[in-house]
Every structure is written in C-alpha cells, then in structure tokens.
Image 1: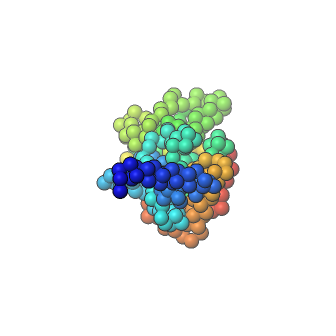
Image 2: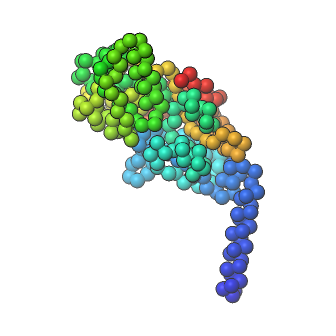
Image 3: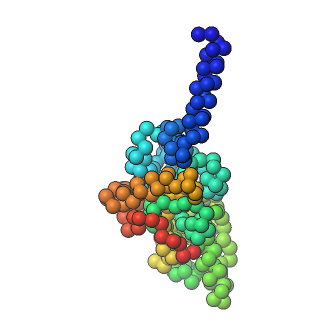
Length: 281
C-alpha cells in the first residue's frame, strides 16, 4: 500500500476512535471502550498501599482487584502519587478514580463522590512505649504532635488542639506536618515528636512490626470516621462510582473484606456496606 494511503487510513482510524470515545455516554463507557482505567494511589500508606519490589501491594490493591473483576477487559494504570496532590488531581481530571485511603470529612463529602467505606479511619494517638509523660489525651498539653499534611488525621488533630484551648487549657506546643507518615514515625522514634495522629487501622501492623517501640492511647482523638475511595461528583462519573461502591458492598457482605482485613491488619472491622455515612466533622 502507498505510504500516503497508509497514513490516511491511520488518520481515519484514529479519528473514528476519537469520535467513538467522544460519543460515549459517560466516563465508565469511555473506560470500557479505551480498555484502560487510570487510578491514583498513594503507595506509602501500609498496610493499605505500599511498594514491594517495584509493585504496589496491600489491602487496597487486593480489594480493588476484587471489584474490578466487573471490568475484565480493562487494564489498570495505577499511579503512585503524593497524597497532597491526589484530590486536586482528581478534581482537575488527571485520572479517573482514586483508590487510596481517603478519610471522609464534611468538606470532602461535599466536593467529591465517596464509595461505601473500605475500613474504619478513627484517629488514635501513637506514642513511644517508654514515654511516661503521655498516658492520656489531656497530657498532650504542651506537647508536639505530628501528622500528614493535607490528611483527615491532621484535621482531627487540629480540631482536638482547638478543643483543648477552647476549654482554657494550653493546647499543643506545636503541630508538625509531614509529606508521609513514615517520616512522622521516624521523628517520633527519635524523640523529636511526642505523638503522631494516625488512624488506628494503620497502627496495629506498625506496632507489631516494631515491638516495644510504639503504643497507642486507649482514648481516640476524634469521632468514628471511615476511609473510602473517591470519584468526581456528577452524572459523568456516577456509574463508575456506583461500580466501585457496589463492589465494595459485595465484598463486605460475602466475607471477602473481612478476609482481606485479617490478612493485612490482623483484625477485621465492622463498617457500613451500603453507603458512606455523612461525616460529623
């Protein structure tokens, strides 16, 4: 075939594909036609997501693979990104969906479409096991506590500090923000922090992996909250959000979720199967 004819045929096929994708009713149909979904993840959040031998693994990945059995011919392009850029990137349309542990709060609930909960995210206070100066939450007056920048856990910590001060107590001396929780754990171990505000479900495996170093307080820093996955609000993303939420609900009801939680956390959590409860903070 003449080179010009080949070029014209290639252009025609590309135009036809672009036209077909443009005519798709919504994001899910475009994903099915393109046979690829682009997922955003922060793979520095063990045991939900972490990197082993160059591959993203964890509770979230296993649960995602279960859900995506409903899209058998679709390839997953999973991006490992800093958490601080994930929700703004979703809002800007840089990827299709967020499969990472996002704590629901009022501001996020109003702006984005959450799936049913994947786990509980209630925030606990992690401390050094040998630090006798912190035995209750009230002991945090005059202390320095860290958390991840832009996280729901940081919001809970800041709200607790404001509560202390509203009650006429000194409150925290400082709140330090970190790009990743691993950095905060390192500073806590070195004595640069007095505590880290993190979700209890993340802390069990951490404490087990470093016996004798860390413990949590029995009191929680904030009210019961949940992790969910996130899509954009609106008709274009509605069917994709429903596909993920329905799959999570199915995993919750058929025992898959509890089995994966036992595998990755060493315990299981009772979370709602139908929809994300409206947050209180």
